[in-house]
Image (cartoon, rainbow, N blue to C red; front, side, top):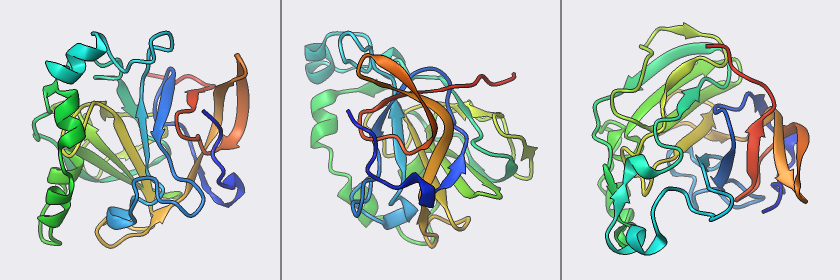
Length: 235
């Protein structure tokens, strides 16, 4: 668990879109896209989950049960946690109604081939096979995509003007998701099929290192880094 090797001084700075403690699961690194591809503007995308820091597990239940029998998505610690706007802006697109993957089977998820989803995706299709339920927010920093939200949790509509910290929805397991998590990316345009990913850094958070929480004025979380915002959100 270490800080990202990316230079935060070149990034667009936004607020952290979650509250409480989180783990950065997939993050960008120098010259390496966070998800192994530039497709869908996801070069600098980040995934966030919650872990039990004693067991290192993302949810309740024994590891063998997760791998062999499967566990409910609702047993994951990040399930249904509020997702917040990382900056003030206008909601330009919303997708809700895509079913969550209600049960997570570890071995099946490891074997499931995502190439089939990407291969069948064309410019004329909607986002849902990849993103599940989503919100797209446009503001001064650029355009943010929040994906894999829980079905029925989205509380904003296209055209809404929202301040930073507004509750947009909740963490779910919809779309091309292997377990409940928040997928977040910043782009230079409203359509991820044609936009380029934009490196973003978060202001005012803390990272856990060497047995203590350390303040980070502006930074990009590294892979498996434990982070939390250093501020609270007004409801």
